[in-house]
Image (cartoon, rainbow, N blue to C red):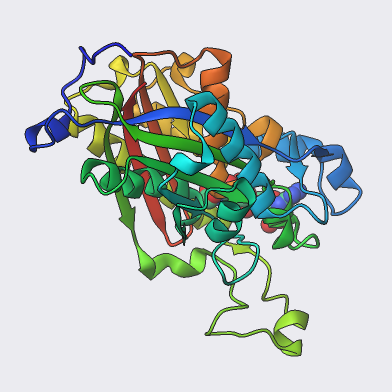
Length: 343
Ligand code: UT7
């Protein structure tokens, strides 16, 4: 790997003795089944024209009945491990970012640990909704930089189809299933994650939530008939908050690295709505050719969205070694996050 030459790394100010948290491999996995907007026209009162014009989404992937979040996450992990040249035995820690765990407990990360045979690894889930993968990168990075671990597997994985209300046209057209994964390792004095930021505002938790199933509202006959175990969203308010928070987070990480947006080769935003992505790009001054967008194929896959897009950006050549990449996301919580990577 070539030594980093371009960017001021804010972490260099601290005494990390050349330690760098590098993403040495990424991978993704989406289910085979495709659900198009035309299929949805037969389920709820909607049209392909409405969905495309309001969101940019044309289709999404839906997991099979017996295909769980852990299955998608484990397969994405295997692909990332293969590209990084890492064996299951080398993995020290597994972080799974998800809002659709296989079950409330144990952690889906533990299920993934068993499925991929990473028996040495510690494992836990992280819940930051659509910001989960960026939160996971930041948390994983801390373990690498502090010399606690050498190899961390970060996964963003979702089976959102399991919590979608297929009678609610306001939400069911927006989401899809999938997973993405990244291997984090120390690569001294080399390329890597330059900085990341995370934020949250719990006062707006009600904008996007699944009210049922936790200690506040355990499962009862009433909670099921009241449709409380499905995702609910105030779309308009969420939209406004998303644009503001993503811009703030992106500006913060750019400023920390003393970078101008024009120096970023590829902006990889959370894939929720094309209009949100365009509004954020417009405010940041990013050009259309800097944006990586794949939401027309997958819809909003929450914690998996940025991870899948990063993998596809690398595979397609949109991101190459040495390029500066900006990741930025927003989700329920509310949560938000951004990261700059020198790839
Ligand atoms: O991943 C976490 C972050 N998530 C997001 O950031 C999502 C943020 N929100 C959004 O992307 C947008 O707000 C939506 C795509 C959810 C909605 O777009 P909008 O332009 O804000 O539409 P709206 O909610 O104002 O709805 C406009 C109209 C309404 O009809 P009326 O009341 O004006 O007669 C809706 O009932 O569109 C109607 N509508 C639909 N029509 C056809 C809502 N959903 C549909 C639908 N098909 N699927």
